[in-house]
Length: 150
Image (cartoon, rainbow, N blue to C red; front, side, top):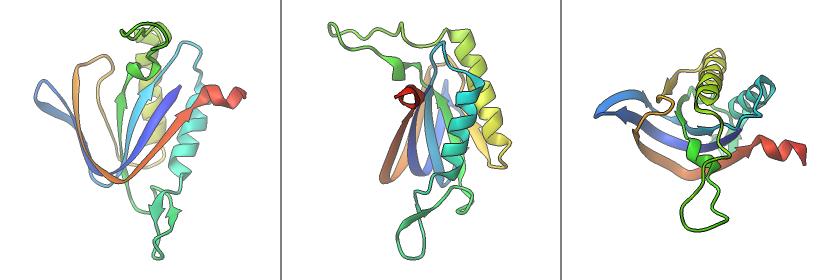
């Protein structure tokens, strides 16, 4: 499982010119899955994301988590995080999870995020989406559960 987390002042996702998810201050998450991903990895990343301290305190130090700033999350499914570009110029996506399994994991991930009490907006797995954001910082953190094995 891979997650690209961007700290944002605001973000929204649209499908066919209709806004389906919109947040104020918080995180935009681009989320990708592979077939081996499990619920344990979902739990691990939810914990890491909710407790990540990348918001500034009164001393301008990144010391606060998303709950402490009453932030929100916009989660967008992104199978292209598993693009393989080692050969040729056209990326291969064979490492990305099966679309149905990935959609199920995406829904479970978003449910677990919501259960933390945060407002969670979402895109739609497999849809052609347009994402708009105002990056804050910029602060971008990449999580990859494959690195847990190392």
